[in-house]
Length: 215
Image (cartoon, rainbow, N blue to C red; front, side):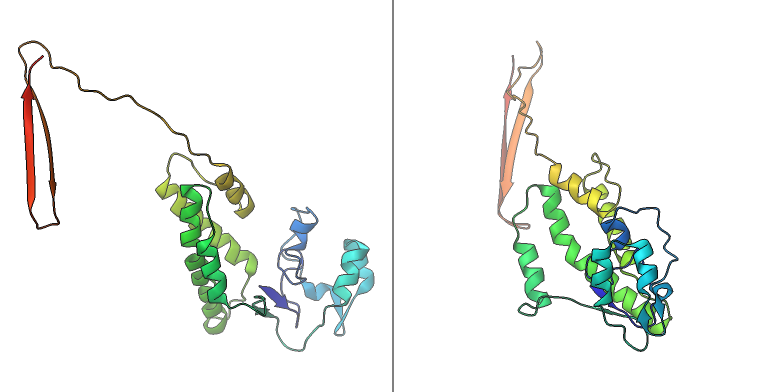
């Protein structure tokens, strides 16, 4: 997703409006304020090249100068590849081979969570006048995904931002613990009853049995 610039009332540093992702992340400027707006770098419907040059490398400034400024409000748009549908992208995601059970859980849940948060953001913008934010959507998706993973795998204690979460999931390795199991005789003057059983459905035919043994 990417913002199409209109009035510019979106975060300059923390929204994806250049097609390169959040500029603060791209340039490793984590302390940049979320209150700085794109509109602060626009004068009379044109980019303020001088002010952009004071904040950004020339290569990024040149890319920004090629971005068209539209009339009206900013608009978030979907940037799926022209030769593929959203459904095809989701199906491809679900069919991707995973490295472990945790990554498999994330692959199953993420498309649904993402669509839900995008839909909520759209409804909030349309009916309550709350401006949509890709940064807020990512935060919500990360929080929900972390909640699910911590519920399913409580011993791993997932936390952090989306990038940290993905790195931790990819680094999880399956540890195989082998425990030797054998029948142990009971103490003197005791009997041990071992049982087993099975059924063909519920309800259905069933059977069971057992054996008593001493030491």
